Length: 229
Image: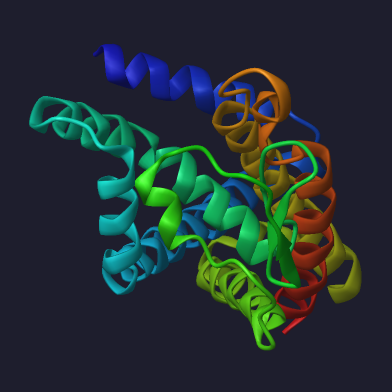
């Protein structure tokens, strides 16, 4: 009974919305969240591969820290706790915005400018240096937006009915999907960023406003074209 009451209350709230919001909110939330989840999944997969290929550098960093067995266990546990942050950093990297490890540094598909890094062995897997194929990473965002938008076509009947033209429906849906994705990524960027120490380490993470702007533009263009299709 409680579930039915909640469902009825949500449905009544939805029916009181403006017709444009009512028809867009469910498909936009589904597609926008799907894009965010796909970015995080790809980021986690790529980070796992980088760690596997960079095990020699990571081992050398462990040896350079010169900690005891207990210290190594504590250090490993701390790095596992930082993995969600790195996954969010990776999602920002795929948008082209990148992230920073310290003031004045930037790690992005266009290239990396990295200063002295903290003694964290996991950072040995970072893709530093210039990547000739780096901008190909943005294809991940574009492909995710295309797949997510096409996947909600069965939920778009109300949009096709309410809007006057195909272009107005496609643009409205593209804006809505891009808004959901950019807001979600911005919130994740705020949660994952912060300071890790004094001096240059007081700034670590992602610029949330830049991430929201870039992700909005990327998702909007692809989602609008896919929605029109």
